[in-house]
Length: 347
Image 1 (cartoon, rainbow, N blue to C red):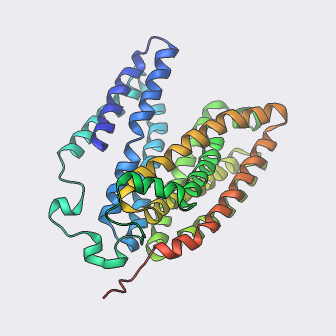
Image 2 (spheres, one colour):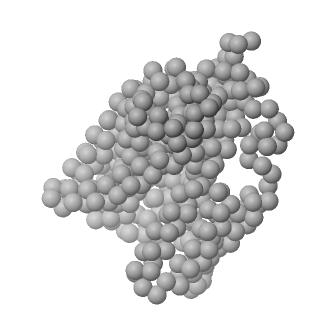
Image 3 (spheres, one colour):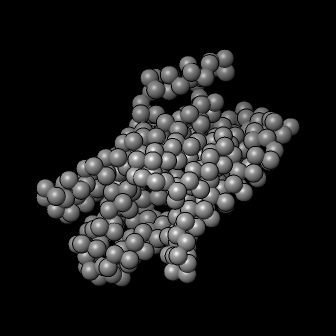
């Protein structure tokens, strides 16, 4: 799935600069979103099969930095490329070629499960400390597991709501940052666009720090997520009131740190609280909620509130969403304590 997703993404990126009208361009962008949607579930499902409870969160966090590295390189790289050549199509074609190379590597690599490589499973090696605790039977079918996860406990629904809230805040800031800074703050548009790159850069050390926390406190990710919501709310309030370029760029760095790192916690919790056999599907459902609920709502709601009232009111809504997300993290705490076992008590 990962190889097909990468190769398909590369093919669509080759076609994007050739789109003759907005309708076809929109169709290609929608198709691109569909094929890229397979990347996260397939990657996280593999991570869940290779790393035990104590290490899983750390490696999920390290993997999660990939989107920020790519986004920050793209922002700076595209600006540099366009300043040296008139062939703007290269901004799409160079990433497409990189996607083809990565797709070939993934496809020609070995199997993606330990037992397919001849190794024992995590449960055979670590016992209860290998995989999250679950009451489901091994004889249950895949679809029965999925239905059970949706109906028997509030966990999956809470993760869906939590990810939707985080994406609402994330895209509410990122998608409207150029407009907000260029029209409400002392920024020219080019500097406002570069501030997005600083936001992505701020996420990288923060996510790596969360990897450190995940290794040392693997059964306390909900607490870490709740605390991070408090700091994100403070950063949003500062961003709303800052009036100089330096202060706004620093606030963007901090927002990037505390808006991306908690999403790592959501990925870790999805792997820890959902049965391993349906981890990929659960990650996909939770991820889908981020875009369908979070990003779409941010693009529809925030500008309308700004038109009716002002941008201060829109950003106040983001702060409230952050507070609600903190409450959801706290509510998930008992489920995490029950699921994540750190020592094999069977030995």
